Image 1 (cartoon, rainbow, N blue to C red):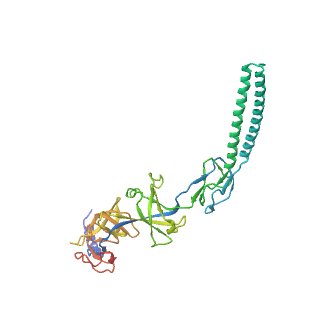
Image 2 (image 1 turned 180 degrees about the vertical axis):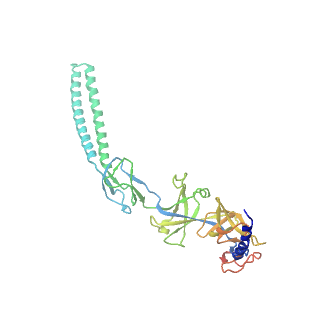
Image 3 (image 1 turned 90 degrees about the vertical axis):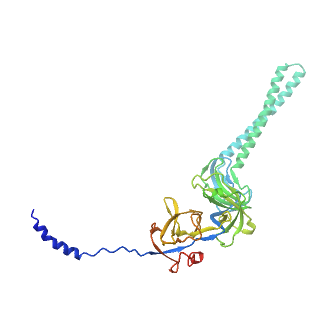
Length: 376
């Protein structure tokens, strides 16, 4: 191929290149970054949501199996001790009771006959009309009739109890907290039908994560706050800690007791348990929730190097997250400057222009103008 056609196209290529827009130069100016310094506090406050429950909540069940023919109460009903709650179809039980009465009547007749015969044979023995062995046989039959009579009486008592068990009664005064069976349902002996919240002591039930449960002990003092009355905490005490985690939630149930005469809490109310954990006498640093991010399960924050205003990815160990702040147990010092917003678009070594929430320039060397809690 001749090289002359290619040479003819060269001026056209130069013209097109001259008409193409120039690539924009990269913007090297530092981007603004909202920075704060960690706040301090004397303690870590953990908040656990919970529910007001009765201290005693027995599951109520029939002592015999059968089909529920009638249910007299529902959830939320107040019941008195001895009040009927539900009833089984007792037709079979009544038939068994009638049969037990008949067996008792038969046993009594047999026992009277055996005793009468024993007296006659005793008279014959005294007259030496019968042998001693004949008398012993009659005497054994009389003793057996006595035993059969006692057995029939016991069977009648059992059948009578079974008839009484067909009606489920409240063992104590309280409120029906749960209904677990309905009329028409066939239940087995011991199967829960109701849960009764017994009148008296009240508690707040909370769930503790696996990583927190070791910090608690029975008897620890805590504060409780009802959602309906925020800002009015009252004292409580951890009464019980579950020895094993719930298989579904993997949390440990804790029961917090309190004096309900002063708290006046109702069953089922939502509550919060506030727990202050001292940090060995040292102040605890906290940062805004948005300042903490994670990479491969490890928490970190972006700290601004005061020498050249570049970002340093700093791993930290955090405590339990609060509503808007995160306690930092390790990895930060009080005079560090931390980026508090837009952390997801930052990179290691990036140069930034630190500003406060009023977009004022922050001097990283003097420790003021926007770092502490007041600047947020």
